[in-house]
Image (cartoon, rainbow, N blue to C red; front, side):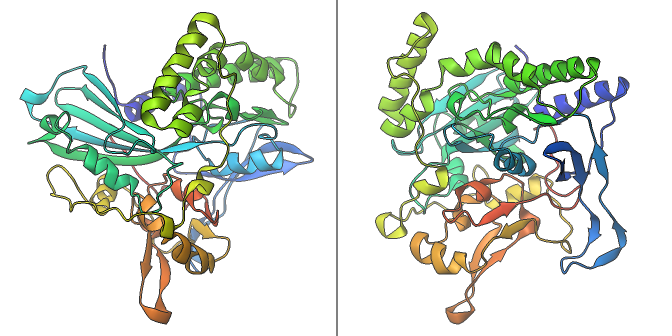
Length: 439
């Protein structure tokens, strides 16, 4: 078995695509939907050279419209345009709410004697309590690389929990720490993943396009993998588009893509594991994962479940308890060798934003953080954000929420976990954000 970097694989695939005549516009995010007469006609890239106060700087360049006969959206989990499409076309009507996890990944260069090429290690539980879902992975690849990752389910209840700090605690476990001791952390990243599974998959097509990959929520939760389904969905959608163009069609629903999904490998993969997340959330890690394993076994052998298809209930943002009902968590200080602070991770992610640009983290109501989130939840954005973007600063009447948008690693956790649903993540100026290497 050979383990490779997914970011490097995507770069290689990009080269192959360009050799076939595909045009790739790196550094130009799709910032706006072009919807005309109820049909998606394409997207527009964001404006470049706009100052934070809104005036056009000397390097201003307006966004460019990219018009298509069909547009496929592959933004990953909680994409900004995919979120708008779900609402505009009511694609999630009749579906269960989507659930998410916040995933972290560090790349280490470890001592040769600790390296086990091709080694794969998965864990569940620790350092989390039984009521909080999550797990980790450890991959040894290349000559000395070790990729360690941690996913914490965002339906956790304690507003004092810090997912980043839980990840740092994980590395202290005696099963994991020996691999990293004496090594050097050289990469860091964070991103939300979809966990709702089969019952949360929205309607995939709409007039003029479709959702593919994690924009549609195709991740297999118990196996912590979704790349296989993302690639398969891209191929299915491409085949449906080619067939439609061959028939002289454009701007309609790609019903053939929906049918191919329903009758194909993605649906079968997700159906077998559809109850793992609901059981895990309801009963906790120990009994929940055991019941989920039993359910996967009956689905694989008999094609049916004792539980039918379970629902998810509340959104992740609605799961937080009030601070008065919760207990503070004291995390150890980072040692700088095995555990680290958040800003050092931001540095390793290669994140870079122009400071003089409009904020891409927008508050619907600027008063809510101090009026509701701080007194009721001790403003959890200070802790769930892995990049130190949100800070409560000042004293007395000068207290305010400071948004350090230049730190943002585009994980989208704030767009999901904010208990007031007051934060909207939009695309920043082109080229901003993390720049991952070998991740």
